[in-house]
Image 1 (tube, rainbow, N blue to C red):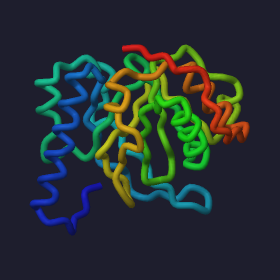
Image 2 (image 1 turned 90 degrees about the vertical axis):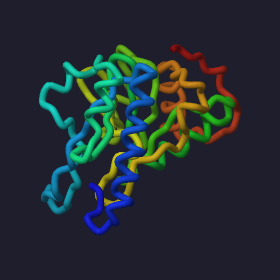
Image 3 (image 1 turned 120 degrees about the vertical axis):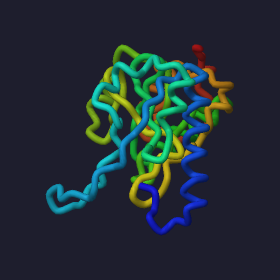
Length: 208
């Protein structure tokens, strides 16, 4: 959440940055959603878990094709996070940071890194084109989550309790062309198997 101790000028600048990012993504066709403030810490077993940002509107599925001009009106004083719906324009594979680092190294070896988002809770999101499924090797891992149809993810600069969501690899690196899901899945499978070799995999394909 926005820190209550921040000066008003900082809070205002943060909201302006979030609004600008939302508008830019919406103009590129990404299904942007306004997020509500994350829920407070709640006990979960012996741990305290910080719930993630959720859509500000219950009918968020109906908002995914909203014109960018209207998107701009969503991001005002009461907006606390920037979300994007998955399953129509893009998907995301969520992994822990250790697997994320191995996969990122393999992707860099191709010379064509995928857009990657890092969250303050130590989780990474690899953005891809929409997929019908993910490999069994990934699906079988409790620590790996596929964000596809009827789901959403936070994007920078959404705040969490102890930090802000940020880009590890920005979409500009790919010229805003998302990497093919199958190619990124393959790299994640290799990384999961502990393949840290720098040998390039086949050149990744892209789709608009």
